[in-house]
Amino acid sequence: MQNRITLGLNGDVGLIQTRLFNHPECVFPISISKDETSGSVTYIYFEPSDDVFVLDQYVNVLAEYIIERYECRLLRRVLEEEYRELSPLQKREVLKSIELFSDDPAIGYRARKQAVLLSIYDYLKEDTTMLIDGFVAFRLKEYESILSQLAKRLVEHYLTRKEYEEFISLLKYFVNVQEQRPEKTHIIIGDSGGYTLLDEQGEDITAPSFADFIEGEILLTEEAYDDLLISVLITLAPKTITVHNCLAIKNHELFSTISQVFDGKIDYCSGCHFCKN
Image (tube, rainbow, N blue to C red; front, side, top):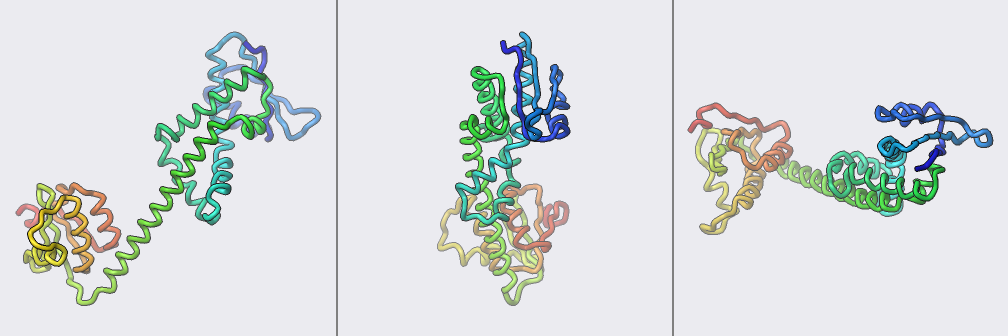
């Protein structure tokens, strides 16, 4: 077992004490001092003795410190090198979605932390003096590989979201340019998931509304029926929509899209006579 582990960190003592020395799991003996010859490096000394559990705690805290301090910087570097077509603003937007993948088994926080932990243990087998900046720059290849995969997923998510937003904007445009729009359309959700459309007088307009989109008496899948509903509503382009028996909705993503297209013009009902009938 090592007699003493020495860490050299670029940064002031206050920052290091906040992020590492005062960590809730930092219950082991640590001393901090400034290098007499280099005012920019702070050294942390840790004496693990023969307690393997304490060493594990120390390495765990160190891994968290590295991720907290360096991860965003490393991710920005990956985006700069691999996704040059994105603007600086787009890259900032990409990084905002990192929490969506925090539980992913391959690229989530636990996977990234495990990669850092293994690299620290491998390093300490060879040397007990670690300059953190150098360690991060040269000894975290597996961690950097995971960050590259994470960046790819983040960019894919960002581009998909932008495409969806553009799609919604286009549908909104089609709705708003329609002439002779009906005041209201009712959508009644059947207990089995089907839809019945009524006009503002309560007359059933389901068949004629869907007729333009269905050739003959074909059997539609549930997914195709859902897609047709959006097409029908955009063609009708009512000024307002009321959804009845909304507790029976199965495809919540579909109605989320409808709500965005008819922004502020859709309401949900679960207790009127349309719902009950």
